Image 1 (cartoon, rainbow, N blue to C red):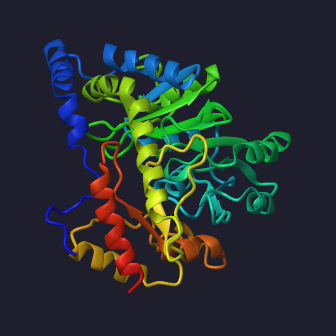
Image 2: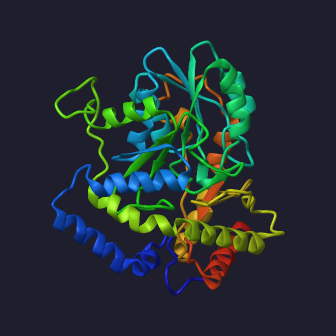
Image 3: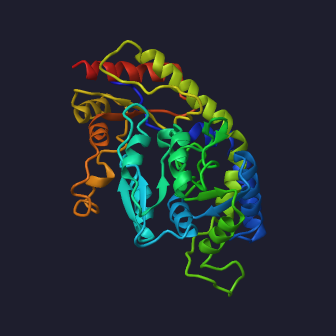
Length: 371
C-alpha cells in the first residue's frame, strides 16, 4: 500500500491558511512602524504570554536554547556546579548547562512517560548539585511534584525545559510556572511556533526577571550601562507580532492535538507490536511518539517512507552517548533512555490531521511492524 499523496510528519499549512490575513497585517504593522528590536510588539507579547501562562514575568529571547542558558546564568550557575537533567532530550538541554560552564549530570528516565525518573534524580544528587533541569518531553508534563520535593529542602533550583510543552498543565498550572524559571521555544514546528527562531523564559521572581532582561541585551538594563557580560538574544518585533496573532489559538490547537492522539490510541488499541503513549491530563502532544520494542525500528521507518508516510526519530542517540560527552561521560549508564532511543518513532501529528489520513498511517505502520 502506497499513499497517493505523501503524508508529512507535520503540516503547518492549515494553520497558516487560517491566519493568513491576520499574520500579514501584523507583519505590515511592524514594517510600517520601522521599529524592529525590543519594541511595543515584544512588550505586548511578553505581557500576553505571562497572563496566558499565569506567570509574573515573561522575557522574550532569540531562541529556546538561549532561554535555557540565560535562565542558568540568572541563577548564578557556572563552573564547579552540577545540573541534573534528562539524557533523552534534544542536545540543547545539556548544551545550555555546558554553555555556562557547569557539568550536566544525566539521570535516567521513566520508560512510560519518557521524562526524568525522580528516583534516579535523587540518586544523582551530590553536594555540587545546584539545579535540576527537567524536560516536559513531547508535551507531557513530568512529575514536578516529586522533583520539587527533592529540590526544595536541599536549596536546589529547578529550571523547567518547556520547549515542547507550551500550554501543557500539571496539577492545573501551566508547565514553566512551578520551578524557579521556565523556558519555552517557538521554533516553527512547536505547538506555538514563530516564523523563525524565538524563545521565552518566565518566572515569578522579580530579581531573576531583571537578570534575564539584562543578560539578553549584553548584560545591560540601561543602554550603554553594562553590568555584566551578556548576550545578544533579543526577541525581534516581527516574531513577537506573529506570535501575538497565534497565541489566542494555541488552546484550540492543543485540544486538536489531543483529539488526534486519542484517535491514534483507538486505532492502535490491541496491537501489541506498538506501544502507544498514554493520553494523560495536561499532555499537549507536541509529538505522538510510539515505541516498537523487539522490532527493527529503522527498517520500519525506511519502509514507511517508501509507502509515503513520513516519521521522525526523537532521539536516536541519548545525550550521554553523543560525541561531545562520550569521553567525559563514558561511565554513565542510562539503560532506559538507551533502549528508548532504539524503539521510539514519532508519527504524523498536527491539530487538523483528519481521520482518513490517520487510518492510512496506522495501516502502514501495523503492516510494517507485523512484517
